[in-house]
Image 1: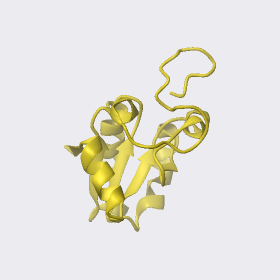
Image 2: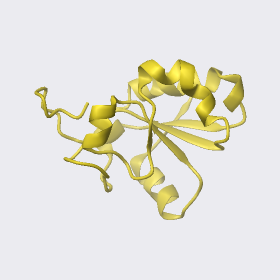
Image 3: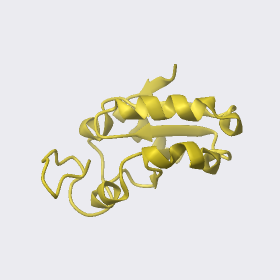
Length: 119
């Protein structure tokens, strides 16, 4: 089981320049529409083959639209031998709960199911 981190606690880490690798597991298209500054995009389907990309991280926070799939992603990351020393957390409530700044195009919180949907 992995822990969750609140949006406020993540914002505090980022504001204090603490080393944290934010892993956004949405599609590249959704990621381009808006993501937490400093995030890397590792779409969930690619995560099993790219988890070794995170082997140098001490702290990893997974992010998805609502915080459910990021829990699964966190469990997958924790199971990888290459990141066994890292603290892995999931952003509670996902991007929906994030009040902070977003980088990229449109506001990443848009929940429209149409072509402009970021998730």
